Length: 522
Image (cartoon, rainbow, N blue to C red; front, side, top):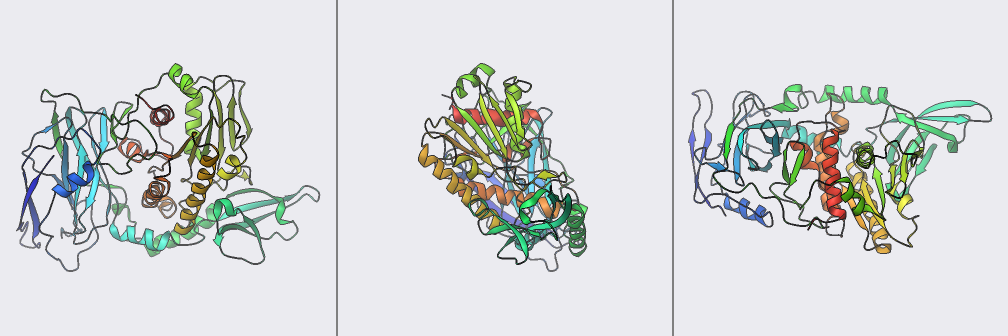
């Protein structure tokens, strides 16, 4: 293990700039760790800082062009399999060192064909440490992205997330007899709203209900379609942006810190970086310094033992099992990827009973995908065609229990309030536990969120800070219950692409992780 001795001094970078800390690290022993179990607390406790930056009055928000990062102990050689750290010094536009933490960063090291993400430790004084795993040999470049300032994070978590009715839907009512059509506004709301059409699902949404303004001449039960009320939402977000423009200016959102560090990772005659030797079982440790790294289109997991599955191996793994996927369009990608792997995309056995349901039932594979209701989409979607998890799982045939269950509710819920998201996930947990009580040996999995792209206005709707918080909720709510958590956050952060719908090579690696949980690799 590693032990560090630390001393700090202060140096002034300019006569017009207040002193900022220069932190010196003396490596007592090389850092090379080959086992992920228990290393987080050990490594963190080995790093101690004895000072905080000098207090600076009237320090402004972080600025990506003046903030910088540096390699901790740059004279130390770094070999494949080592952990090493980069220090971020957050400064405002005048170069003053920030005296508070809370800024949100994404940090990666990349080479031409490989990449990984780092774990960030916040010292709440404008200084951050990023711990990276050196998984491959070669020259790597460090990339630090400022996603949000701490002030923006505070606003997102304390004001935006609890805000009701951030999203508005349009509802189309139609009477087939009278041929009368009406369009009304809808929203989610906790509590009772009088004189509204109330569409509640307490086993899935809890205390929240989907309320629509009542049509003048059509009963509430003749709601045909819903779509997102884009014009209303955009007007609302533009107004919010006007109030908080300083927090979400382009210079403060998804901006790369301008300096660069190149690092030479050498092999030094040692074996390649280890991958995990832990089988992919339920209740794996949810926190580790590194979950893995990309080399080409292959994800090398440090979380548990995965592999690159062949079609015959997959057929053997899922033989006799009924795979049920439930979620959003990112889970639909899993469905499409699995159909491609099995070469049955155009099979006569692959059907779409409706727009929210894909199925394939044949001798080779039994698969069903169900889209969750109330999707956020500009397109008109038939109302209540999608299914909640309890509607699927509580009505299964439990005579054989040969099921693989995957749930992934996240991409369409960042517009819900925090309390409603928590309640939604807790009710899903109860649904999964009811299923596990009936089928204790079936594989039950939850796929986590991942970050995504966003524009200027929709940051109020799908900020990566909100998605990271929802990711943390997934880890906390579903851990310790015998449920397999398919943690794809780091895998997606580390990949060069940054989209809600990741490229298919990423989807295949996610599916290989799922197969490694269904049929653990020896």
